[in-house]
Length: 371
Ligand SMILES: Cc1ncc(COP(=O)(O)O)c(C=O)c1O
Image 1 (tube, rainbow, N blue to C red):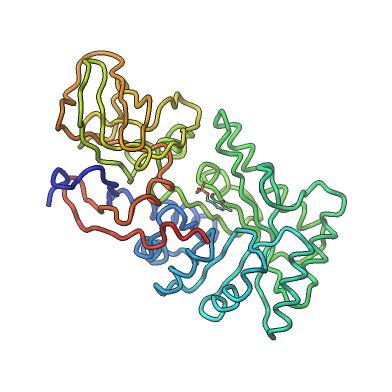
Image 2: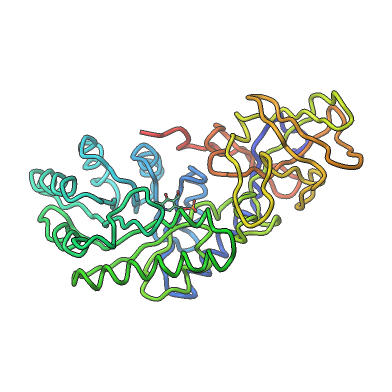
């Protein structure tokens, strides 16, 4: 089967680019003796997780218990949730911990204390890491707070917990505006974890950092034990704009068809916000619009004369900024989306392709598992 036979809109993943991306990140981790634990939120696929583990990944991360349960069912044995699990989910957490090596984060001594008590009651120990806010200002303890080292000591000493170390996510790297800025974020992240570990006087077997845009700098930092990028499996327009990937690395694309050509400078594709999502792109380059339309379905480079300027649910309105285009009604277009993780979460299946040839349809088994 050829890609032109696929009903549109469709999400395609090029297996050659995917496996190249997985191998390259593994090699970068191996070169510095770091453990790679990819975040599976990007692919939500046991098949891709197995490709990562075959290459040397120590396990995976999931955000939600529901995702982790799908991967556990598929035989993945080591799962970390860098997500602040609430003890209301205790039954599911302890059931999962029976089946896999499970670890998760805590960032609140009261919640950690509750987990510790629940574990003691059940005669179990729970593996936890303390989440540290390194500047993203989402979850995590404030490393600059005077009581931060004391908080680490207190949580590490809780009898129902097995304290593994510190974990951070430099999500603010997505707001970096230069390469230097990105490097500084990765450097500060590692320094923050090292300093807090030292100040606490507590043994931290793990210092875990994770994000795709900072990964190329994180691997150069001393003292880090683990990296947790996720998006690198597929990459996307944002990662190209942030210098983390080239167009040729973008494994996930959306195949769309021109369904209307109402004006010379306006093309309507059948991939609206329910395929491309409304996420904008960020980066050092111009990132206007809702994805990059490639020069043709076989090309890696975008056609810069085309701008996806608006999305309705099932329509993408593409403005022809200059010149002529071959995108007549019925023609196929291929789009590198702004954010591949959210695109893959919108489809039950995506199409694994090798160049123009369809390899197989792959279920996105953990999509929509948001509880
Ligand atoms: C806690 C945590 N770790 C790792 C990652 C992976 O980062 P990226 O999507 O930049 O690869 C994420 C992404 O959201 C995250 O929230």
